[in-house]
Amino acid sequence: MHSSQFDGAAVFSGGGFMPSQATQALESSFSYSKNRDAQSLLPLTVKQINDAFLLSDDKSNMIIDGVGVKNVTLVGRVCNKAGRITDVTFVLDDGTGRIECSKWLQEDVDTNEAEGIRDGMYVRLHGHLKGFQGKRTLNVFSFRCDVNIMSKFSSSVF
Amino acid sequence: MDTSNPSAFVNAELLPNFIGKKVRAVVQVHQSDGGVAIGKSTDGSQLTVKGLPQVPAMNYIEVIGIAESNQLINAEIWTDFGNTFDTDSYNKLCQLANGEFRSLFL
Picture 1 (tube, rainbow over the protein chains, first blue to last red):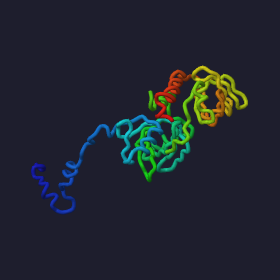
Picture 2: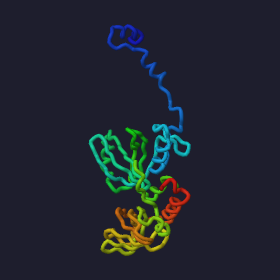
Picture 3: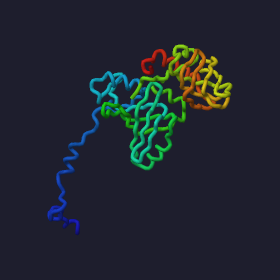
Picture 4: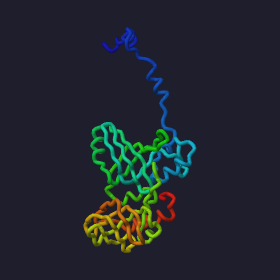
């Protein structure tokens, strides 16, 4: 009985919070990612990234083997690790070159994981290539120690 | 990003192409004493490595350093890969990284 007497407009008309069109507007402006290629994950060497960077006119949109480079996976040795409270940075050396990497530490689990990386370790990284002030760095979202040591040689040719 | 100082994947056969340059190789250590180790390359030849600490005999060690002669590497960095290692795959990688897919590496 009570529910039938409920009048939303009357309840909300007193000022303060008003249900508005905002939620609908948000829905209509939301769009799904258009292109699967934009999400591809490329196994690369640092040399390939460097070559593509030097060749491309549009530094924010590199292409390697006809594919736009967004997410990449690399394997190499960790050097010059520097841990801070909010992020960890290090240089990855895969034998073909060195690239600066950084990972933001948002959760406790990230911090614990980051403490596990030490200089000299081999790791596999998944990350997002970012250009910043003319430098190309790798924004890491996942890294792990290579349990199977041979998989580090799968980076590009296998 | 810096690709000015790469270390080439080598086996004993490819080592002479990089004298004076930085290389990396996996060596199965047979004998090691006082900083000099003698071992087997992934293509089955004997290699000598200077600058290695005492490592367990028969372990596979990756060395990164300067190629001093046809059979000698002066190690700067080394990693112990343990006593099981797929030398055939690594050897194939050395060949591909210096042959068909050289442009991806050097």
